[in-house]
Structures are given as C-alpha cells and as structure tokens.
Length: 228
Ligand SMILES: N[C@@H](CCC(=O)N[C@@H](CS)C(=O)NCC(=O)O)C(=O)O
Image (cartoon, rainbow, N blue to C red; front, side, top):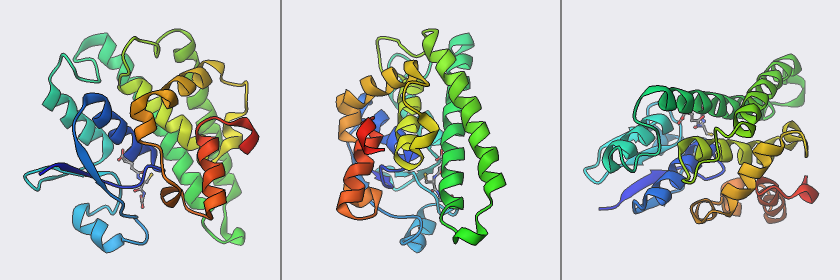
C-alpha cells in the first residue's frame, strides 16, 4: 500500500511534505480532507484536527510536518536526507526552518482571525502578527542574500521557505510587497518552476472561493504581480 498524505496544498505545511516526497521520489497518494468540513474524519487521524498527516503503509499515522519530514529523512538515510545530519550546517538549517514555519504560523493566525465577523476581528493582534512576519521575512532575506539558501540541491530550508512564501502571497499578498525581498523572490521563482513544486500546486478546489478567485489566488502564489 502506498503512503497517503492528508490535506490540501493551500496549506504550506502539507505542501512542504508533498514537495519533499516528490524530491525524494517516494510514491504517495493524497486524501483531500478539510480540518473544517471533515473535522470528524480528521480527528480520527489526528486528535489535534490539523493537517498534514501521513498514513504509512502499516497503517501508522504520523502527524505534524516536522515529525513527518524527520521520518522521510530517516527512511532515505543521511546521504539523501533533506536536512544536514549534524553540527553547524544542521543548526543553521533548523534556524531557517524555525523562521519560515513561524512565518507560516503567523500567516495562518491572521487568516483565521479574518474568518471572524468584522466586528470581532482584533486588529491589534493582527498588527502584532504582521510585525512578527516582517521580522522573520527580513531575517530570511538576509540569510538568503548571504547565500544560505542557494545550494545545488533543493533541500528542506529552500523547500520550506518557498512553500511559506507561496502561502503568504496566496493569503496575505500585502506582506510581500514586490521588490522588498529580492533574494526571497528569486528563490521562490526558482522553486515554483521546479517539477516537485509544480506537482504540488494547489488545485482550485484546494484554494476555495469561486473558480475565478481560486485561479487568481494560484497566480498570486506563483508570484504574478498583476493578480494581487
Ligand atoms: N506545526 C504544524 C502546523 C500545521 C498547521 O498549522 N496546519 C493548519 C493548516 S495550514 C491546520 O491544520 N489548522 C487547523 C487548526 O489548527 O485548527 C505542522 O507543522 O504540521
């Protein structure tokens, strides 16, 4: 039985697992469950009712993208692993991942806050999340500009940063004003053209809204300036 990745690719956490599976050449299928409309089925897979989850062939289910990626690296071994095995390269990679996943967390938090009715939305909370996003983006831009993210292979830091940037552009494009983060924009452009990323583009039904809204959102994710 082939492994089953649970979740939509509009989630950057699901997408980074999908891209990693593609990069490593591990076959998998996907089950499009929503944490909102399929909450009961999701709870059976993950008591936290969150995506991603990865169901292995023995029926064991892994939850949380970091734990799933750790397993993939263990399966393929240190030569092909997407994270350096030890020492300073590993610590540096983990710092980039912390900044990138934190950026994703803050963007998800803002998206969920905006799901509330307008009179309940806490703008001061959103401001705080946005300043945290700005801090993470500035640090990632610095790391990327200094060559920390431009190795010859697509590794976990590049995969995760690019997935998070795509998600920010999808749900909160104003946070990534054109020209502000040139090194990150270049990384994202290059990653989105990679076959592993192309294979893990969210389809309209994974983005939501009307077909036209979803198509515009996908163009935004891919870096198209006109569709903002
Ligand atoms: N730390 C988790 C974060 C996953 C996450 O935030 N997933 C979101 C979708 S992007 C989710 O399932 N949200 C539902 C919820 O938290 O209620 C991971 O890396 O897997």
